[in-house]
Length: 304
Ligand code: 13P
Ligand code: SF4
Image 1 (cartoon, rainbow, N blue to C red):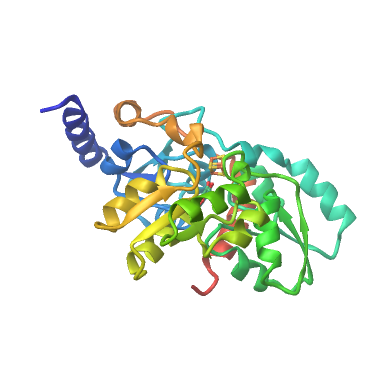
Image 2 (cartoon, rainbow, N blue to C red):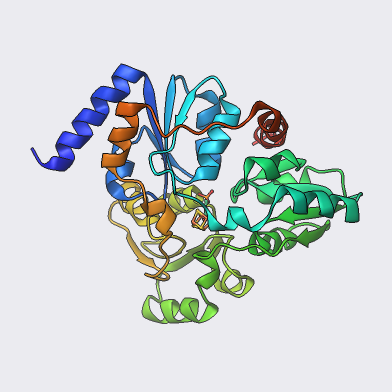
């Protein structure tokens, strides 16, 4: 048995002993995806965190995802094996800034992308993810919508709604680096491929893509499509799920540099240590959690 196999076996034993589940984001390294109970996008993982039967959730992702799980399931122990795994975009807006925006635009609704802190969610009316952002905005009564923190996702949503979207100026350091020229070059190199990109990409990249999807949306589309080749404009970790779920199809990353270092901080060894020690634990003070929960549950309760 290889060291990886031994680790995976020990993790499986401890999952059983502790009644634990491992939820992993699509960007996690393959070895972590392979020990997870569920691999998915932010929306699927939030839904699972709210409903899954377990005493312990090990969150293989970044901090806002584990916080969301802790908010939705306060009775469960939520562990984040890599304590320093954060999302730089989530740190681009603060709760104080949201309060100032509310004063300046009292008629506007506030939509917080899940890539935000619990404090920011607590100041917001409703959350969204890349999979449901348009539906969330369209569900609101308000005609003016403050959308934060991702300016690119805000611009993407604005294409599909008559509401006035007021974007915050945050961005994902991984997706914002992809360029329209890279799409042009990829099309030249792979003329038969469909180009799928994430809505965190810049408007010029979106304009040149064939389809825009959340990470799991890309996997579903690629499996169902009659096309055999795809250029993938998101973080490269998704390639593992794409290749696994769509055997026989070929995937080219739009940019090999599209690596989220924070998503790579978790490895099976850290997952094992977290399960052994039952830490590092993520908790959210109930005062903040209660208000943030309202915003997240509003999103989860929308018709699918
Ligand atoms: P998804 O919800 O599409 O998985 O995206 C999460 C994320 O962090 C994108 O950078
Ligand atoms: Fe945050 Fe971007 Fe990493 Fe997603 S890929 S976790 S948005 S930094």
